[in-house]
Each structure stands twice: as C-alpha cells, then as structure tokens.
Length: 474
Image 1 (cartoon, rainbow, N blue to C red):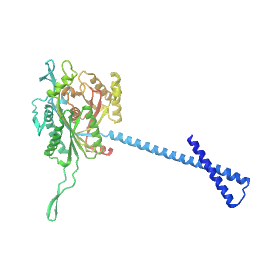
Image 2 (image 1 turned 135 degrees about the vertical axis):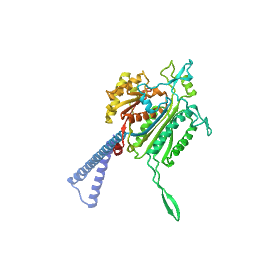
Image 3 (image 1 turned 45 degrees about the horizontal axis):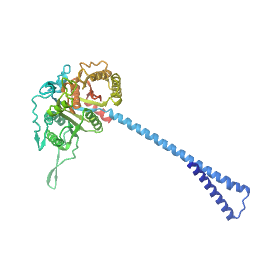
Image 4 (image 1 turned 90 degrees about the vertical axis):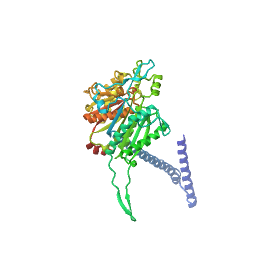
C-alpha cells in the first residue's frame, strides 16, 4: 500500500509541476494555447515524464541487483577458496622429531613395543587394598625417590605425593628431550667484536624465540606449584645450554585425554603456519597416592575384584618434540591428525551401527589424505582386553587395512600402564615414533574408547627429503 501511495504522489507532483510550468510560460509570453498545445503540454508531457522516471528507476534498480548478485558470487568464491585453503592446511602433517617415556611399568618405549605380543600387566600391590582387604592392581614405579625433584615443602609450597612422584618420573624424560632439542636447534651466530670510541664491545643481532617448552598436568595439581614449575623448567633448559632468549615456558592444566588430543591438533595447526618453530610437549601424572586411591574407591571408580572395569592406578611421564613441517629430518615421524571419529548421534547408536560408521569415517578420512591404509602395520589403542571397545578398534584397523593382524600388531597402553591422565596421549605419540624408527611402518593411534569419543591419529615415516615439499604446502 505504501509503495502505490508513493508512486501516485510522484505522478501528481509531476502533473502539477508540468501544468504550472506550462501555464506560467503561456502567461509570461502572452500566447493563447490551442487544443493541440493543451493536450501536448497538459497531458502527453507529464505522462511521458512520469513513465520515463519509472523506467530509469527500474533500470537503476536492475543494475544494482546485478551488482549485488556479482558481489555475492565473488564473496562465495572467496569463501570457498578459504575453506579449500583450510582443508589443505589441515592435510599438512606435523613433525615428530623425538620422544621419550618413563612409565610405572618400568619399560622404555623400545622394550614395551618389543613385548607387545605379551605385554606386562599392572601388579598386585603390597600397600593398597580394597574395601574387602584384597590387594588392588597398580602400575607403580619401583624404588622411585619421590623427593628427587621437589620436597614435601618447597619455597613455602606444600606438595602432594602425586606431584612429587610425577615430577621424579618427569626428570629423566626432560633431560633426554632437552638434549635432543640442543641438537636440532641451529647454533647462534658468533658475536662480532667492534670498537666504538676506543672501547671494544660485542655486536649481537636479534635472537628469535623459536622453542616452546610446555608441561601438561592434571587438574588436581596445586596452583602455587605451577609457578614454581615454570621456573624449574626454564632453569633446566638453561643448564642444558639453551639460550634463555630462544624459548618460552608454558604450564597447562588438562581435564582429560580428549582435551589433550584437541590441544595436539591445535599445535599442529600453529606449527604449520610457522617456517621455523619447535615445541617440546611434556606431561606427567601419578595416581599412586593414598588420597587419590581412597577417593576412587569411595566413588566406586577403583578397579577391584568386584569392579574389574574400574580405574587401575598408574603413573608416568612422557614427552615429544614437535616441529614445523619444513624441519623434517631423517627418521622423524609425520603426525596426521588427530581426527575425531564420533559425534553425539554416533555415541548413542547401537553397537553394530556405531562400528560400521566408525570404520566408514576412518576410511573416508584416510582417503581424503590420500593415505595408503596398507602401510598401517601397528595399532596403539586404549581398549581393555576382552572389552567391547577392543572390537571397535579392531574393526577400524581392519577397515583401513584388511590384511592387518590386529592380535599380533597392536598394543593397549591403558591395559599395561593403568590410568595416566594427560600423559596418555603424549606417551602414545612417543611410542608411535619409536615404532616408526624401529620398523618404518605407519602406526594407527586410537584413543577415547571408554568415553566413546574415538580419536584417530596416523603417524608415518618421514625424512629430510620431505621437508621442502611440506614447506611448499604451507
């Protein structure tokens, strides 16, 4: 209604303006208009002006619509280009240069992988018992000096058993990987001595921060201790010979393994955008603590003879050295993923349908990466022996490589080492890298079985020859 009123008003205004102009012209000139003049100036002319105005307005609006349509098309093309670039970025693998573990089971990565056909199991404890006074199973480090790194009270900070044991396990892992960092970091340029006004001084250029040292801990750690840890890590790095200006230190609290996998995925994305960057990812945790075990038992979470599917107390530390894609070198690992295989609908699906969709999602992802599933010869997973989850892991692995022998080519770290908290994903990556260096075989890593939040990661063999090609992608 408003549109028609506006058009009628514009027509009336055109007629009034035309009639007024014609009448004023006739009066000022003294001419007497004839019938044809009146028809022309009072009828045809205003109608023509109104029609021309509407036509021009329609053409202008049509042109504007076309311009907006072209702009939307260009925006859509630009958006599709960005999405395509994001997919390319996601397809760039991270680089694993070094890894190390120190778990309660007392085996290093090579020994544990060599025993994968008959892996060790947590032992019955002589110290901890369940509500029926029966010994529980634990995976605890023997003869561990829990006061090696930090005392019961350090600089006014009260420490717990779990924190002291975890840091004692972390110490040798940190030493091993800091030594690896010192090897891969390029040496600093020598200082040039110059003489200014008769005084000799060193002329030193800008030194870039190229390394992040990051420690992941569980949410039950003391906040006051986290500040002490940052200084401790920095001091250990300096003692190794790493210039303090070349690195920064970060401490992050992680809720569960799923959060750690998400963090690893974000690290991969960040490293892919940097030409020269290293990231030392560390984690340590311990549940060999009376307070922790008693709390699990009170809440029905502890694994006992009556609750065999509960949590088995464990402890350990692990670390991996990640790097930008262009820094690949001989006997390194290429980290593809992590990639989530499940969503809310899949977690609520029936077992048969869930397994079918899990296998389909895994094969689709590897096909998108153009990854040869036949090269997968080893699987690291977290499913318990004889559980429903181990069937899921076996189906995913055989869907990707039908010739794969799951029984002899897989290892459940959870069944060997018990609960490891944020250490578990980092330890799996360190084990995958060790397997790559042992046999140059691609390793499939599966996690999140108990929570039905399956995460898939692939680790393949890399070399320095791939550094240039990976750099060109980024």
